Length: 131
Image (tube, rainbow, N blue to C red):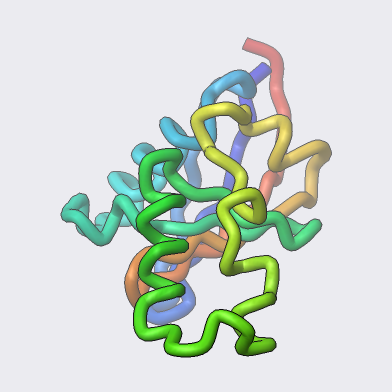
């Protein structure tokens, strides 16, 4: 099956379409999406996040631990109630290399938010076709 997506950059109004195999990993899809939308491929790309409709957060596998460490930086009180939120723990994040697009997009109409630095891309599954 081929999944067809609409990608929208709300900051400049640009809308693009992309079609990829349903078994593609989320990690590979992010590379394709960045390329199609002209987003930087620099170190900021490593810390991108995907938030799906179930509010699950997917990140590049090797960036999760670093991201959590950065959240904890400057925490002078480990009992601070704010630091007890799930986002401060690695098991809150899903490593994107272990999931395919069908995990993110179970049906037509499903959508995600891709964030990289200050760039945001809304991505919606608009059609599924045979090979």
